[in-house]
Image (tube, rainbow, N blue to C red; front, side):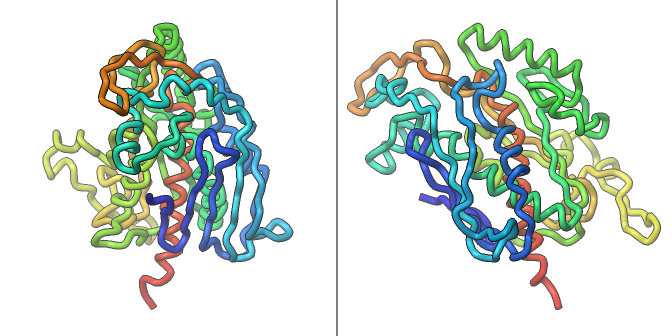
Amino acid sequence: MSNSYGTLFRITTFGESHGPAIGVILDGCPAGLDIDEAFIQSELDRRKPGQSRITTQRKEDDSFKILSGVFEGKSTGTPITIVIENQDQRSKDYSHIENAFRPSHADYTYQAKYGIRDHRGGGRSSARETAARVASGAVAKLLLKKSGVSVAAFVSQVGDIKAPHYTELDLGKTEDNIVRCPDQATAEKMIALIDQVRLDRDTVGGIVTCVIQGSPVGLGEPVFDKLHAELGKAMLSINAVKGFEYGSGFEGIKLRGSQHNDEFYNEGGKVRTKTNHSGGVQGGISNGEDIYFNVAFKPVATIMQDQQSVDKDGNEITVSGKGRHDPCVVPRAVPIVESMAALVMADFIMRARSSKL
């Protein structure tokens, strides 16, 4: 099983949804970085369950402990270990699926691959694991801040309700509402839709848009570790993600080359582009413009309705939805997307130091 990500700035996460704790070991963080624990906690609070009526009602404080790698508030250059205890497991909620495979979950594939699975909340396949990513992503954000790089994500679509393009929005307003959409009028429509879906005992998907600003030119390692390729891999490793597009994405096919090309110009000695269909990445390398991309999340697989399935012996059965689950995952996915983007950028900043003499 693959539980590590990164080359120089590298994380390894551990733990299960209903185990005693989850956590992360972060290796490669340079010594001397101020580790702001209040900031790390604030990032975890944005992801934690039970934060509003449109999220799962599981109650987890997601308070953390740093076990190593930090002394007197600064990183020491040794591995940083962060542990987050699980406090509100209700394993009995999953007793009915001990031998059953829930539709569109990882139950069947984990059983087929490993011959054993933790049915309590999905075990390692649960999105509970992403709390460890957010904790380490917060450290990555602290490192990026030293280089003037910022990472901001927001909910840009729920179902068929879309927000304006990020260039028309004030991303500083993302946290002003429970759905994390910086356009209040759109947010109210999204919240109403999620409320209705929840009452219907169903779920709905959406899109999280992420914008990285202040990136230096030259991040990315062609030909296989291109910047956009690593961002895509990082995003597709998140639970429930079904799609990734950067820059003009699929809409770009509607343009001709004469419309799509980003022409260069000189702005006070700095090379800029007049448009940004490239999404800040050309040839797999950052060009200094905003890096922006969309991440599509499917409707949450657990619904509070009966569904047809099979058990581990191949018998056809009916599976009933139980437990505490998000009717729409995207509001809580915003800090997860940011964290994975920050981890990618931090790793490439470290790798860029060895690109040339």
